[in-house]
Image (cartoon, rainbow, N blue to C red; front, side, top):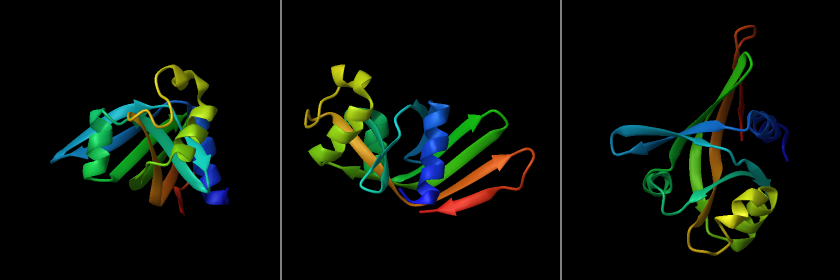
Length: 134
């Protein structure tokens, strides 16, 4: 995993719950997520294909993630790209076995997305912001 992506992955994994903003027409929508996974050099997350957030990302892939940990926070802007491959779904679900009661690879609802054209900025009250791209 490249260093810039690892920084983002590790921060989001440590936080546990982060928030993704999607676009719904002209309205922003925000909801909590808890999956973050590296597969084939890309940063993935998971949702249900029947959920509004998946439909919004398919219609407009521009997303932003925000997460806080102590006195630090991160904002991650990029495009959410839908990956229909069973291998990607299986890899993520293997990392999050608690989701396997609800989702299965290829079940028609399990949806994994990876982030593309990412700019992530780390913030704190004690240091200047630091941005990474991948």
